[in-house]
Amino acid sequence: MGTIAEQSTALRMSTLRLARRLRAERVDPSLSDGQFAVLGWLHKHGPLTLTQLAEHERVSAPSMNRTVNCLEESGYLVREADEADRRRSNIRLTGTGRDIVTTTLKQRDAWLTTRLRDLSKEDRATLARAAELMGDLATL
Image (tube, rainbow, N blue to C red):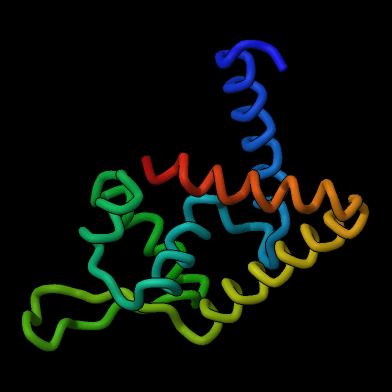
């Protein structure tokens, strides 16, 4: 089993490899991870301002503006004037943007489901428990 430090390294490396492999499963391969993250965040939380998106992704407003411009040009999102403050824009997904997110998530789940089917019932139970623990670790 090794030391806690060795276990930490093994967990980090395995988590990163799995995350990288899952990110490769996407409907539009031209989308960067950062671009898909913006689409996913809007899908989950609804329309947001450029500032809110930049804060969530921990990037500068000019950097987020470039990302939003690219996604807007691709037809995945639109900017709309805020009803309460016309100087501010709200950014929301288009139908195409929603479709890209939902189809990509389904594709990722299908890939993982196929892989899990190859494992024994005991190994799947172990991974289910590990998922719970990893979720707990992430919230500490």
